[in-house]
Length: 613
Image (cartoon, rainbow, N blue to C red; front, side, top):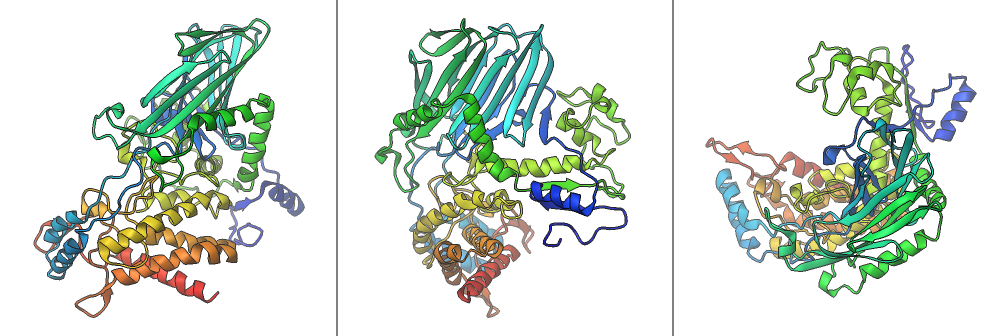
């Protein structure tokens, strides 16, 4: 690909990929005499309201996220705040680790890998803390039982989720977005008939909380996270309080006849409005990864009201305009246009992974997929088809616009879950609906955290990496203590999983995944990649090099001379992998895995190259 972003390897079939700023793309295409590209709406389309968490449509501003279910008789927005975690700063050291480490190394040297694996459990630390759901906005539309013309879609170009449907002759619409400039989630409910908007509005959360409603149409929810991560089926409220939080939902109505009532001091009831706007502001008492929640000086109620007051001083149209300007300044940096290839994207093959009830020879119109009506699939254009249908039909019609959509959806998710000043993207971005979610929704530096940020540079979203670099800085502080106490090493270390509090010790559990001190070094390579891509010398000098040097110092301490005279890592694992030892037993601990040595080479090379700049 040349400097203009156009491939030099176009074949006779006219296949090309074009990645560049949209405005430049249009101008260059016109100058070159290429045919104009048909506008392709970037919408993730759903055929029905969500039935599961994974069916809901995500919105986010990096800090405040929501999943919009798009129900008709009842709507749910599941809310998240990026600093709402259990626990607090921990002691990420294990004074017994040096003794255990010596024993493990001795067993590895003797080739007793299963025995080394068993002893390596003694290198474990405490469990990682857990990311918590903030709660739900619940809307109830009691009379909206029979409806037609349902549509729900996520518009990637405006970062809005839209839901429309008809009840009789009335067309109802809802629009949702999460504003980064004003740090609120905004919802507009409207109808094409005056006085037709009626519903109840409430807040709920699985966390310990209290709710009150004010005469100013505000629902105020205050609460706290558990002071420790709940285990198994524990009730979150059974644990001592930890992080405090506050969410405030404000209802604004339009129309001369609209009335709002307070029900049971817990919810608002709206009757006969022309339209309604909901604004949700939220805050926590998080003051940094090294400050205990009990010692925080921040008042989340005051913070949430400050945010809300700034937002509600503007009209909905103004809030949306600021939101669009902010979001599109990032999203519109890149366009991707793909032509239909002469050989096909799949090279003549069919998709290998289809739903079990779809045969390889079935016509698309014969498909049976939950929640999807395939009867009209071939009648719809791509902007109207449910996205799941387009994925199914891709094996018959290799539509390049679907690839474009998925590419831009990835960019949308990164913009929505990671912005300057927010926390690092976690295992599910910022979206989670469980108090005891799988893997605690914690960032995993054994690949998942890195994967979240791989698109940032090639997809022209460099700023979205800022939270990652801030987080690496926090890890280096705690990681220096872990390196010194656990391993007698210099520099800083981080392992396979971490959390809001920058945990750096091995997690409690199986060494096949817990014992992996290459998490920090792998993250450090992102610092060098950022410099290599941007050539930002100030970033290299002030941020990247000190952290890279600290990581390299740890690696120099961690490497030991092996029996063959070469430097090796011992113990060493390949994350989440086992092997069969010579005695036929399963093991995960050995020495000098390829992954270890590859990452070490990258870090050392980056430090050497940096030193010469």
